[in-house]
Image (tube, rainbow over all chains, first blue to last red; front, top):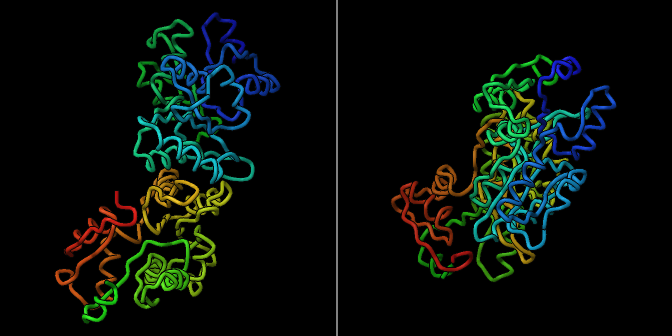
Length: 201
Length: 201
């Protein structure tokens, strides 16, 4: 169906909340599964965060998955004035959480950017706490409100639309998550379609 | 001044949110500093939680500091139907947090008991996230509300009063924390006095 959409001349954009790998790695995985997809067609939280960091001259301390770090290669990270948190998985250690917390609470105006607000997800060895849980921990400890990048944030869909040059009324979002995919797109003025695959239940 | 209070015949009770050690250890430390204090005079979150667990036939999974475990010695912990979280410090690992989360979300009616709701505290090597931050993470992930034991919970002060056999109007709380000590006691109908020592700033 992907090939039929592409053949029809419709514009296409992949919107993912994946923050455990670079877009390169993510795309390679999908290509390996037979999907016709390129890095340029992917909207993901890390590059969206990079745009925000540049626009606002923010220098992040990163609490993210090792595999995501290359996405922030061009960003100045010296003397951090904000914290960026992603699904860091094994990097969510007691020491790393305390370090991010100390930097954040030490800032004159703490800025916390979160690459998503997911509660949990499933892996082969069981459920795992997602970035949203750790975001809440830091929010509470520092009495700040995180800025969330990724679905269902309005800005995230808007940048995907801008990249295609398409107004929301002429776009349709297809996804398996009723909140992140369908709800987020609809709040942007897009239509949305829920597929009963993936994590649908 | 402790000795003068005791000599005067006034009833005395030590209310602590300490959850990194048993009362025995806590009392030994204070005795070593010259304070006339015994275990029987201490109201602490762990024994208060044990009373709740017994009353409601709850079998806890413990995510607490190793040194606190002996306080739960007499509690049945097989086949847990609730999670008790304390300031677990180094035990707040990614694996332990996921384990507590999985048990909690797998329960028909998740019960989360938190030994305090502190945001952070200071140690010689810097600030540390306190139990409240991790409580918030689990609350968010499982969509539950934790039951907080310890100051400033009303029930905590009430059990201290019950142990002394004194009505709140005849008691005065002395502490250095405006929220946990002073606010909590006042909401119980006690008078309260803030001392400018300890973490006062």
